[in-house]
Image 1 (spheres, chains in turn red, cyan):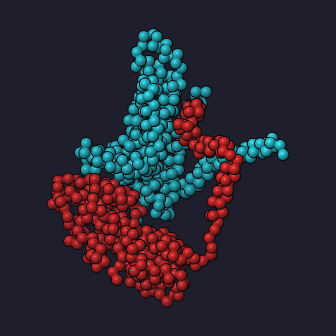
Image 2 (spheres, chains in turn purple, cyan; image 1 turned 45 degrees about the vertical axis):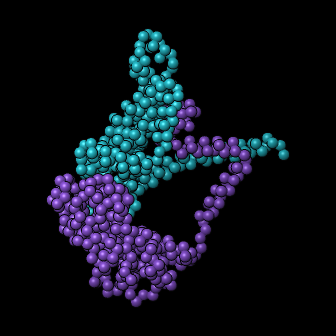
Image 3 (cartoon, helix red, strand yellow; image 1 turned 120 degrees about the vertical axis):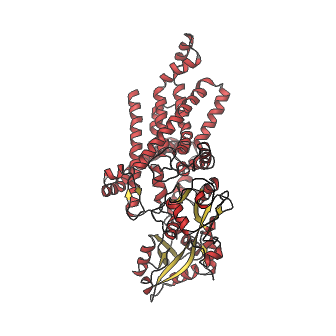
Length: 304
Length: 289
């Protein structure tokens, strides 16, 4: 806007353009600048543009491993596939975020190599599918360090989030209104939390934030807040509660003692030959080498 | 080879480049319009226009989904109004200070800081809002939680200041010096001159700055998302609310099916709002000519 102002154009013109035609103005000034440049410069710009265009058309044919399913597993599978593709540049790992149910169906119908499910397989599904736990999603329940409450039962947790308990004094804490912090409707962490506490579509939130960092920050700055976040991302600025007396520590999550957790499962079809690339990726994802990546993605690796 | 030929060729090439750039901008607007209209209408048809615009419940991921965006529309309208009520008087007074009152050196310093304010990315406004404004509002009003419509209004009113100030200031400065001199010569004080002569003479420009501020406030997503709480409630000044922009931004990444289509419809509604604002601007322009 300042640029335009200095050119002394009429006000309304500026106002009109600022909303709709800003790119046009920028473009004009950019080209004006170009004219001033030496002619060689223009050719240079053209060459760069041409390079950028041609770079987009590169790539070579190679094997593809297709994965399909849980949106909650996006980060884990993203970390795994990215690292795998770096080491095996000829293989392309694809991910289709459709949801656990759709992913299980896709693999049973042979539409993808590996299905991704953020719940364990049901008995009837296990007839012709194999579920392999690749990582565990441990969800820590966090409060402000000033909060004197340090342990909750699953039932109390559900009551807090559904609005049945609205004051911390009901749980032995200070006389203050409970502020429930959650994640946006499409979040995998929210999906996991509500599934474990059996509060789907019943939660009464004060805030729905779009990232783990925001949740931790908000709980850290509000003494009455309670929130949930993947166990790996809990910092010293907040206090992680014990649930049913168990703290969200890695070994407690791996042993299954910590209740607010669920498995991330790779689903494959029985009696079906895997492509070499798919087998190789599967082996990589379930190997010890993947542990660090899984931690990086905010989940807990399985115990070996 | 003569130089004239070469320079003619360059002239022609540059002409083509200018035209292409012009077309690109228009094309951008066209593509967005067509895309939003095409993507945004199916969901409205499926949900029903009245149900969509006047429904009070938004529960897009529930087993029994409901897609009413009245809470978002009202929140955006109230939030913008609030930001205008707080931001515009401050902005106009600041413009008067820079343009008419302050000695040149101080005016330049203030102007520079206003320009800096306009360059700050909205995520930074959001961060500062989240760390300073939200706890402040909680403490001062003794609320359980400070992330609410009021905090969003405060952040938005600061964010619209640069547009209001710089456009109003230009308008104030465009008022002929003779008006002021005449007023002062008749014995009016400086304050009287500013409010009775200069501001009325510049009112169309000042109004333009207000409409620009509205455009900025209604389109802001990032900063608002970090301070407003984002729960799809009907708006309350001290309640957690979700704006039209944040409704799209917070759910788009994982959405699917009708939910995704409904998000496009929200974007279409937002686009129509901006179109209306643009038409208002055009009519001011037309009125002046």
